[in-house]
Length: 479
Image (cartoon, rainbow, N blue to C red; front, side, top):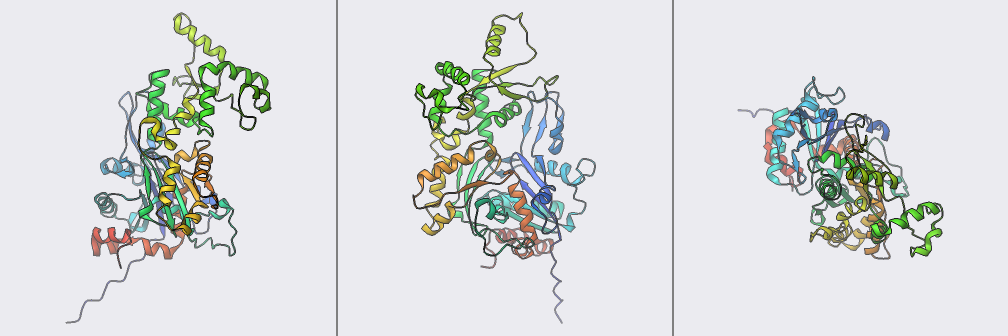
């Protein structure tokens, strides 16, 4: 009896949908046409809050609906991703359904009409738990039935971005924009919501034994700032979103922590006012007699006032230069209830830079973990010397924390101090470090040969099962 003919292998659908499934937000959208420019590709990307929010009046907002919240007082967040791992598919499924699959709630440019004709590229954190990966594959392929699927470590997708101009590399042969190839050596620092990871990449493949992680991210910065503000100024322990806005508005990474701490000490407040009057910004030498370096003078604008929202006349908080007279009037209002004001503000000084400092010096809050620059060197220490030099010359920082002013400059200065003097240290970030991973996924989808190697079709999943798919994504299948 003749054997039945083998089924014709299914091709990956040409339509590709990329989801960078972050803990704080989803970066999602359909891949632009092959060879599209940087701006054209990014125009397809939408940032969707990856959370379910319940407000004080007990209204529920899911995914993209979170942008419609008008009053953030005492809002409660439920997030499906914890410590970089997708642990709550019940909540994530609700967010995906309303953001991508339901015509009534999904944006038109994010609506997936037929998953069977779509290839999904989904990101994950390095060294994810195998049981969670298996659950993720089964939900994606059995619940929604995508025609193609690739689960990739988010850091690895950044290697497909056009990074040569960013690092100033000389290119002998211009790359083919219709078939982008990954950067050969890249050290990727992803400082996001839940953690900060250091991932060395070789031809977009993570070198797993060199991957390092710091358990501090944007969430921890927000929580620390919340505690400091609640102790020094106003009780905002139930207002996480407001404190997060404060962090994004005023926080920065100090280039000279000791100097800035001394400058913001209350005993030096008169120096701040005197320097401001003398125009220290335009003439650094004017206050050199106070003991500060002529080369690196302190910045008298470190102290700022932050006006909190009242959700009537002020919908979102904002910062402004510090006004000593307003601060005096505020203290008088506190002593005399008869005096009223239309706005509530707080004066922030060293809070602005001591909070981000914990990523570089976790010992400040009692943690025994190494700082970011030390972690980079620990990661490189397990690689051959030739790799170390190449990685140090190509360090890319992505994630929300990369947007904090001074973050990239501090990483470069710290790594250069620890690295060998013969090595070139270059630290860069994309124009938008939040969407950098998503853009890399789009550019990888243009390389059809690379997609055939890393993606599976629905037919392959049905024939081989989730265990085989997990081995393929781990690079073990075929060995």
